[in-house]
Picture 1 (cartoon, rainbow, N blue to C red):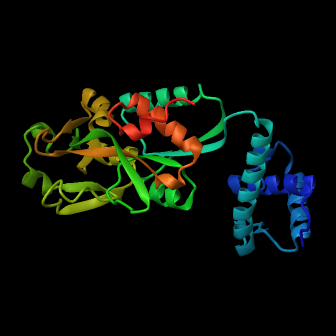
Picture 2 (picture 1 turned 90 degrees about the vertical axis):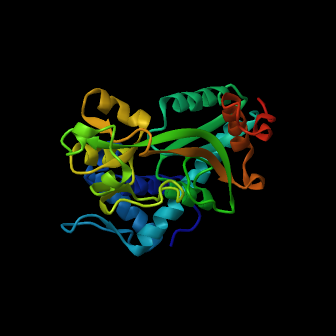
Length: 310
């Protein structure tokens, strides 16, 4: 069984994680830049040191054992802690040192992406040595990862208001119902009533719309997706109607590939929020970034802007 960790152990653990991330030994050759036999030997050495098998490999393919799955989680925690320690040690004279993990929903409006970029630029002017991690994921995944501590900040729209999270309005996004060029309603697009649209097949979000948007829902929801690209693909097929962010659908409309069903009746607005754990659990690094984000979103609460540049 593995006792005191050595440099060799850390190196072998990193090899193991590279194999896991690649999904197999042969695929990991590119990222590790060594041959398959060397990787196999290193993995076997780690298993001998641990005293148990980490994975099954052979004709049946690569698969982690139950202990391998658990060890991979522990290994990621260890490697993250080592990297964080190294960064902290190298930058002891800096005011902000560590990591900032931000989650975002896909296809944020260009103007808002630009503001977030400006916030990052302001943050980088601070006395900091922070590693940024930015993930694109669904609202439900962001909520889960905020609660588990995998994310520090999330930006998106959230229908539920989890009590242990803090929600601050950021901006509005307009969602409009669209049909594809080959859809029967395309020729009448722009004047389609809600009851008329509800009679056709729809592609719906895997996460719900706000309850107050429409009193009824389509009768035929025959496809479900959790991202804009998938919904657009379904609309372009000519067989499904779907709500898409207006800014996202605009290029398709300009090419004549999509059309809005009714810009007045079949549309709604969603509020994007910046979300964190409750304020007492927000790190100094996250607080600094929130202040910089507020500086480019002047309508955010004064409490965020007050922290200013450090």
